[in-house]
Image (cartoon, rainbow, N blue to C red; front, side, top):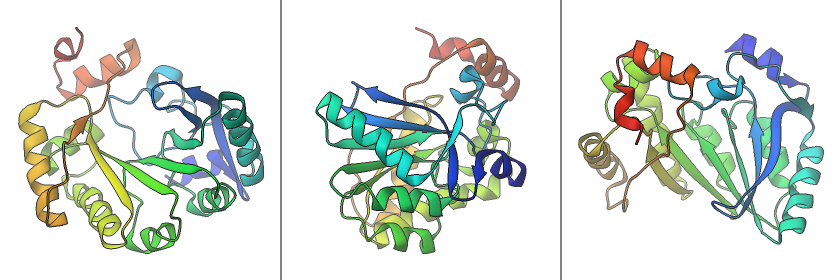
Length: 229
């Protein structure tokens, strides 16, 4: 991860692939570069972001604010979203950017692996913030199959969910689009046990298939035809 950070950050600047408007959720979107995971299904393989973490250019928090606010004004929306690879990597840059966006609803799409209780306590001060927590598995074994990292690290995703609940951060858990109903129900039971209550409907993420991630999914042992209509 250290090598990725060196290519994705410079001082308080972070590399972004692009800024765009999403009609899907009516938000101004910042697609960041640099991730702590290299999951087989990631759309970043299709865009060349995971294989080339120097894609895009570096932006300071104030420049990020300027790009997102301009887009919000053009499209008449009040929601901004940090997504792409892993927004929580380089949390100081992220926090500085959020501080400048107090008049907007802010959503962070994260895998939660780096979202420690300490960071959750810092993010909790933002009343305009919500988190979309993307789980890469429903248990340690299938998490490892998709991510390529040791099964024991699955607990970091559960830790993030628990920390967000503890500090009162609005959190919407979702499951990677390579899984079916059985895995959804398994994860839902685990999260409801941690959160001590109903978490509502657990959604499965949309899955974008291209040649690059199709090959990686097949190598990891997933039946890709199952995901293609």
